[in-house]
Length: 277
Image (cartoon, rainbow, N blue to C red):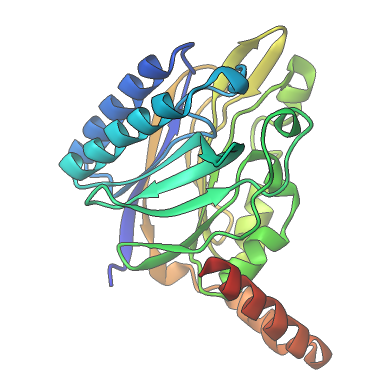
């Protein structure tokens, strides 16, 4: 098992067309892999952009876009996590797709806690995220879900050492400003779980007076910020992470004490495992 990974988080300025976003994504995968990245995280709905009419997005366009991204992951021999709308029958979900170095989709997480904008188009997912990249157990959540700490704590109890968080900010400018310069709870989430926290956001004006705060970042288990983008420009940030530092100590301790909670934790973790099958 690898004990370190070079992780890249991509801060995107979304383009209006799927093909334009995919061209940017595939070019970034190639360049980052050539620069030594083992894993690359893109924002929520990176394939389409977030401020769009998802009802006009066709399944075939998404499938072709994801096939191109998978092919690029395989050619670049790099793990890739990318946000995209997906389909389940006639239903749409807001998903994060995980491709391994061979371009295989090894996991698909769909946003559980939807925003008011999301519910106009998407249905919620119904499982937590737990997958392996180069044999390293990892988890994920999407955007708004930072407000739900159990989405992190339970997968960490199951072994996750790295949390991936794709985001697509869409706020009034004054609200967007309050999310800048680390005032977003991510340091606390990394510290309380003793895991690495990787955050990839969109950035800049999104139209109709709405903004995305940027500030993509990679945070260590001790709360240190290892890499940080600004709140104005597209960027790709990198950090080499030492997995021996992601010991999950506090999550493990919480499984033991207080004693009266042990059977309840055990029951919840069993339920999480069943949903992952």
